[in-house]
Amino acid sequence: MKKSRRDFLKICGAAALGTAVPAAADASSAKVFTDNKDFSMLYDSTICVGCKACVTTCKQVNDLATEQGKFDKNNLWDSPEKLDSNTRTIIKLYKESPEKYAFVKKQCMHCAKPSCVSACPVSAMQKSDNGIVFYDKDICIGCRYCLIACPYNIPKFEWEKPIPKIVKCDMCKFTNFKQKGITACAEVCPTDAILFGKRGDLIKIAKKRIKDHPDIYIHHIYGEHEVGGANCIYLAGVDFNKLSFPNLPNPSAAALSENIQHTIYKGFIAPVALYGTLCFVAFRNRKSKKDGDNEQS
Image (tube, rainbow, N blue to C red; front, side, top):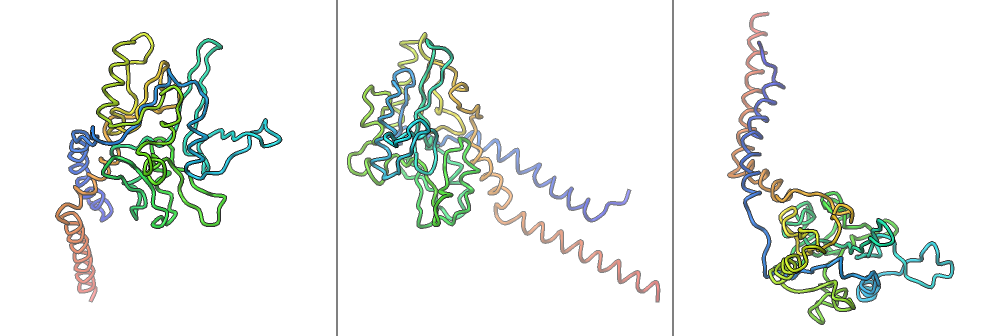
């Protein structure tokens, strides 16, 4: 059966991907991106009392506007309902019954291999050597790839402003952490539901709490391994799905996509091979046309 040029190119492309993708997937799943020396936060949902001091202090320290609640006609309270361009962290309530409920803190997870950093074409999203994932507004071109890439749907865009920027938690890198060496939310938490420290130490604390109180905790540290691990880790007494945490695979999607690109373009072999294939097809078509013209004459 005669193959068309389109079929030939499809076969070449499929063969290249068939070789590159499995190798890249194996490499990305085996690589460890977490660092026990990175700065991290441990949030324990079973200790949180839902006071929202962390939310209010985050706004004060990072100069974010207050938000009027639907119930608050006189605008007396700062009442954000979700993460948005004015809210970097939020406390939400999960309630099954009057007796069974849990609070949960949402914010940037500070992934060990951040998809937002991988997707940003101009390096406006960056990861510090100490593990903090932050944003540089002076570099950002507003493409919003970071919004799409984040598996936790965290970065927000200032749609309401003429010169917008991305808003997300940066662990108070330029404010409280710079001045005091601790995030504002962890500093003000009255029950120590938010601990700040080195990732290795916080993982040990989390495992000890689960071991000492197996009847209280779900036996899972969320963020320890998800998509390559994160520097914000969580303990809870109810299933993490009920707290709106997505089920994510352990291998990093960002690492997989980067490995596929690097494998295909390694040594510039693939582009050269593709260029050679296109030249061959063009030469063959030109020769066929010339032979046809000679036969007609």
